[in-house]
Length: 134
Image (cartoon, rainbow, N blue to C red):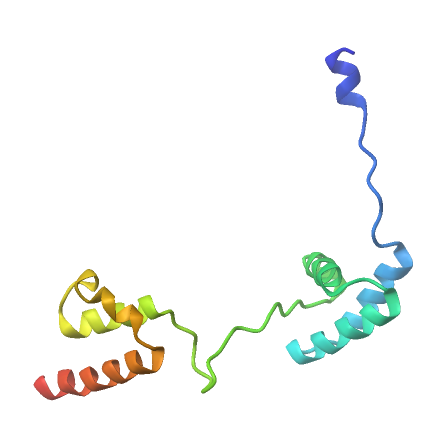
């Protein structure tokens, strides 16, 4: 085969979503106003189309890129702690402690063996001392 014949051949791909299914997704998702509604709509679409959550989420994400559809994709919810705060790694907490103490993070890296609650207590204990000194 020459390179010209290879370049002219097109690969055929299977269509995962026909026009009817795509229209159903668009009509369902146009009424979605927040993340909770989106989750409920995706569950409904899973039942009616037989597609899995990951596939539907990807399709909705792609459809939302076309502004004319009127679809907003809310993505996934951000992880939060039990108290509703943002999730921080132990390493990040140790970096905060190092800044509060005025030392290098490598000098106190053994603190990673402690719990996050203990690290939060250390941060809380060091924070008022800094405000008292100034």
